[in-house]
Amino acid sequence: MILSEKELDLLKEIGNIGTGNAATALSQLTNKKVEITVPKAEVVPISKIPFIFPEPEDLVVGVRMSVHGDINFDVLLVLNRLAAKRILQDLLGSPCEDVTQLDELSQSALKEVGNIMCGSYITALAEFTGLYLDPLPPDLIVDMLAAIISEALLPTASYEDSAIYVETELSIEGLQTITSYMLLIPGENSLEIVFKKVGLR
Image (tube, rainbow, N blue to C red; front, side, top):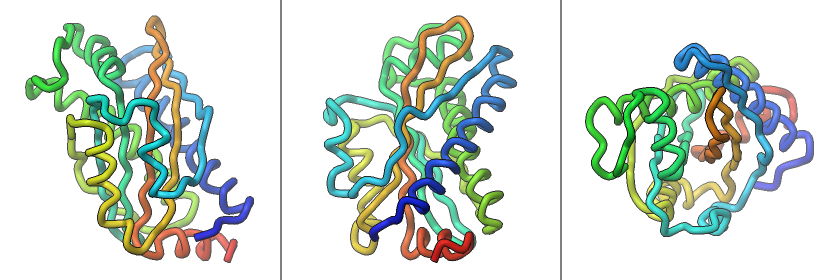
């Protein structure tokens, strides 16, 4: 699908609204000031997504939410190991030595962060378009980045050639900035429906 400048701007604007909502929710969760900026938001060919990341063989933490309703799509939040450990340290107050050995509480904490980040984007999209969107509970995946992305994109690749990539800088008061990556992976005809709904097609 070839997107116009207005359509790209719409997707970026929804991303900005979603991250703003996520900052508010994370601030309430941590009782600290949280700022989220979006240094990069773009539509990228699915075939090139693994090459966006400098080290696709790295072990990362992924939180994936599937959305059904008027349109179907997936949202995937990717945190590198260091970012996941920092979040757990701040939320739970105890160090995490190994993200492959997460206990139930740590898994729940990371799912909640993913739920807030992905859910805020989904809410922004629903409010902006008026579409009914019903997200399922998030799944937590710890694996190599390339493996997580390949699995997430596999059902989509046959009928959609683009996904939306959003890079975010998450700043929690008193901590170093955390970089995370979000992918919006559209289901069949989902983007077409979104653009028609807001009068861009």
